[in-house]
Length: 90
Image (cartoon, rainbow, N blue to C red):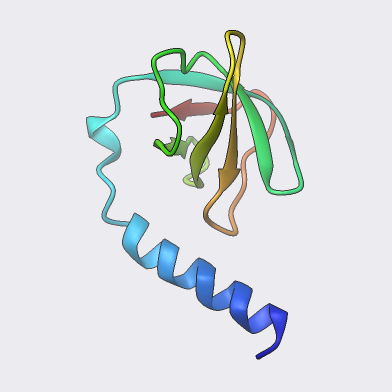
């Protein structure tokens, strides 16, 4: 199987299941500092935890994989991505 097909299948499975995520149940908010190569740095999600699902204002969805005192890092689970200055909820 080609890499493009595997990637496409991977994202389609996530997009189908993540559409069920209830954005209104999100309580924490942050802002995107920067994005690159399918990952981003976010400031403001201080009470978050690793593997937490997050939703960006653009509708993109991601998952947190690293936490520090100043920011957290996340990677995107959908083809849609975010941009610097965009809001994010977790």
